[in-house]
Length: 189
Picture 1 (cartoon, rainbow, N blue to C red):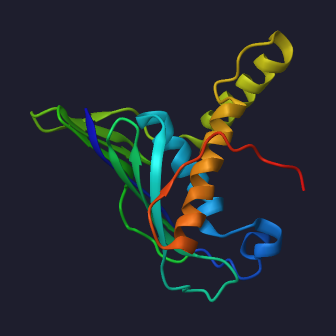
Picture 2 (picture 1 turned 90 degrees about the vertical axis):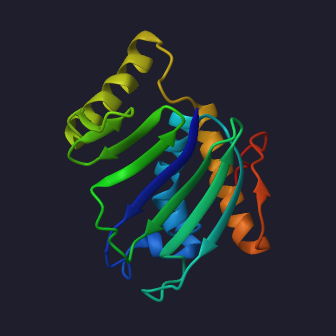
């Protein structure tokens, strides 16, 4: 059983002149930008996210939107996770995801991953390969278009992740835990 999940997508990037830092254009900051990827990973590995609490930290770059935030969540299965997001701070860790469970731990890294099932850390995988990831994404898209295949990531997956991001922003505004409401559908503006 997975008990704890940690993800950090942090890097020192000057966002002052980018469209992502203009609330009227982007709708938010690092949570809506990088947080969506974090939520996608968490949901893929852990299943549905039930509730979140998010906090915005000091706006290091003085942007119109949050540049650093933390999201804490609980899944339907009972796991707890933290997501550290920043455009202003570099974490220094080679692991972007760590998972601890009742039968061991796993660390996913940019250059490789490791698993410990009680006998010590053992290297697995080759790490994140950007071109291979994009190639697989395009292949999946083309298979859907050409052959009618079911996409690996569905519109329901996307809506569920958006619901978590929405709950994170509501949590910041309400300063409390917020339930994720996946039934909510996006309305055209």
